[in-house]
Image (tube, rainbow, N blue to C red):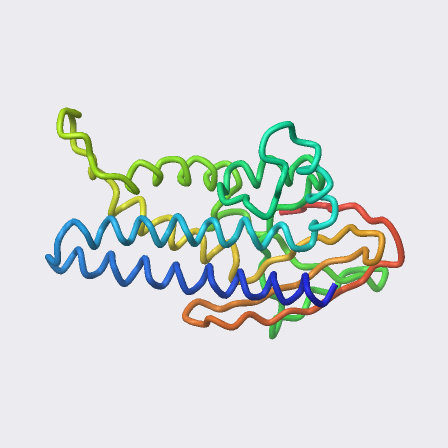
Length: 218
């Protein structure tokens, strides 16, 4: 489990780093540095999304590897790179694989409730949803290649706005979130915090005594 923890924190750190790079390149483009900086921003954002997808494999590593080994084509999960496909496969081994963004209690502590229970309130908005993640990941893909000179329309129309809003939403997803662990060794959650501007995540393990369910209350 320690290796999974290390991989998860490393990939979340990489995601934050690439989101910061995407913002830097976008600012340079807005300052008139040229379209290559906008395309570099799109590349860093797409790689940031891939880092989040790789992170999500870590708490589901064994189940994911076994699932991928059954594939008729390309069964080696160590060669996976396409975030949308990774998310689709993760959904088959753990329906709760996607990070759950939460709101902090006082000093990042959970909110107390009756019966000596504690909880965090889930975010209702202001974060990158799973559906938006896969849609935007696909949309960014076309900007990784040189444009066909016979194509029509403006290839970059709306791209600066898309990048800016997605970077903000991705930060909203990972800045304080829960990752769910269901393995033969550990049943529980990781509580992960990586404030905007930070590249070093903090993590707390909360371990359950057995199986559990996820109640996604707003």
